[in-house]
Length: 166
Image 1 (cartoon, rainbow, N blue to C red):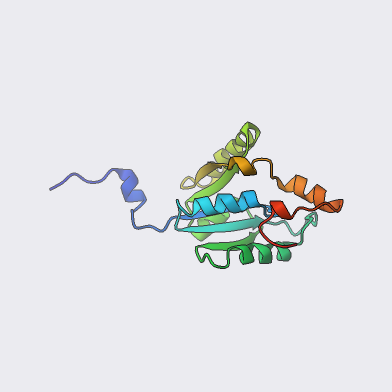
Image 2 (cartoon, helix red, strand yellow):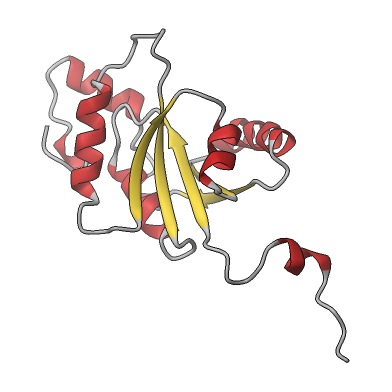
């Protein structure tokens, strides 16, 4: 008889659906976020855009239902992408959705330091969860939700930074 497969193969069967969660506040969802999702589809069978929302904190700039609608419209022709709103630990959501991967976009080394710490905690909370870091495409590296909110708040045009009409 042949040798048995290493234990990692027994724990993660090849036929298992690769579900990844892309968590964030997405306030707003940007072309940078869209780029990360599209590139993730080359790695995963399904990508779930998970909008973290705490109902006790009403500090979003863009309404949560509006943002869900705009993200769903953006990916309407791509059934492997879905959107959920959640109010729990990301590691808990991943367990409930049977997702083994988190996707995070990195623009710079500051993002890495922050995301690495979160990744370590998520792995501690859910030892089957891997965080996959994707480097932001160079042409989108300056796009960030905070700047877009500020520009929009003061009447500036943000259309070139978002993949939907406001």
